[in-house]
Length: 248
Image (cartoon, rainbow, N blue to C red):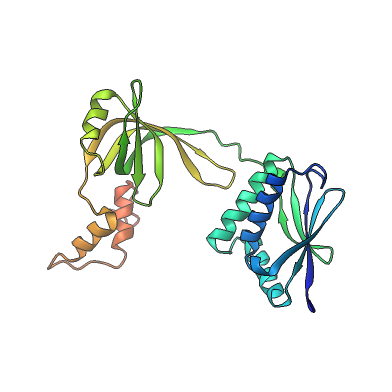
């Protein structure tokens, strides 16, 4: 098609002869999600040597692909694109490789893969609390495994409680609770903190609706004027932060 532009995705792993088909499909899927406009991207050739995937891009999509690549590079692309970009780098790290998206021989987006050094941060163990709904209680042994779904929709399956507490929590199935205990968190190479495990030693039943609904009810209380930053103030108090305005 007239006006088509050629882009090359060079992967420093395997060769066209040794690239597993499933792995190639994974790379192509994440590349399409990273760049968007997948209807306008056409794989036309796989070059020998390091695996080089040659794509033809429809003319009208070329500026969009360039803009999307720049946004990903600046970490300002839509969340779906950034997730795919991070997934691509994980695949590359697993293959001990890196990759580049090239236009006319010039790199417009790097996929560092193996060059990303995992931050050498130890796991952090500390006392904490978790809010959410108990979705499952049960399993062999003691402590008993539980599943918690947090207010933001995250599913935590690394929670445990001794049988007496687990039995009481089972009576709160599908109800909001606050769990207290000792947990261990670790940080991923993308900078996200993830829960490894959480040993529950106490809990508190919560009213349904979560923080947002509770704040809405508080705002509706007559006779009280609420500052527009009240949510931030509540969060600061909730986490025990010091009063930034000083004391009396």
